[in-house]
Image (tube, rainbow, N blue to C red; front, side, top):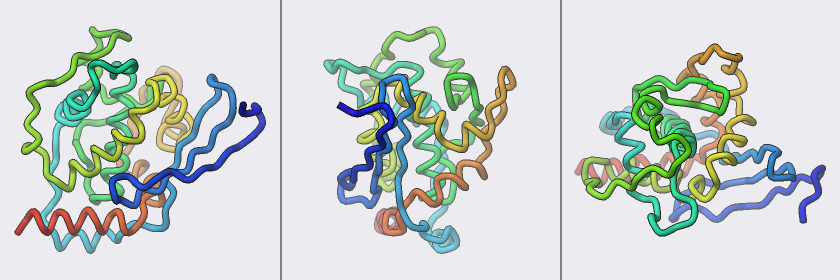
Length: 218
């Protein structure tokens, strides 16, 4: 039982041989924010990545479909619209810090319930709070192996949380906190994502991305 005032810091296993070291800071009761940090030293300098092929850009819908293809249709916690928005936020943040380029070009805004990609909102809003249908015809070859590493790692960690818990987590992070203003839907800028996530990614994780990219290029 965690007391409301206590803070617990625990190391998380490395994702699939990656170096995304996770620290969870738990504030207590379920309705209180759970802040997740991908704790790390400085990432690989982006200039080194310029020696590799320019990372592929995807659409926000493509990133969303990748996550929807991974969900367990027989599980208890399928992906809702709220949860999908937050998974795409973390994919964009971890992606831009690791690749030096965003995963997708569509803007992201700070809404009441956390970061939202308006293009995804228009696509999935009619589902309300209901689970979104799984994507069953996804071709993984449409995604570069090094980018699948990022998306798989983001899903492995963040998809274990409910959409509401992810909402609370994003409310404790600078990209949303600094951009949010009631009823304004201000844009969460790419520099804001870089500023927050660049110190959250270990250098050897960025290096692993580069190595996979170079192997794939050859």
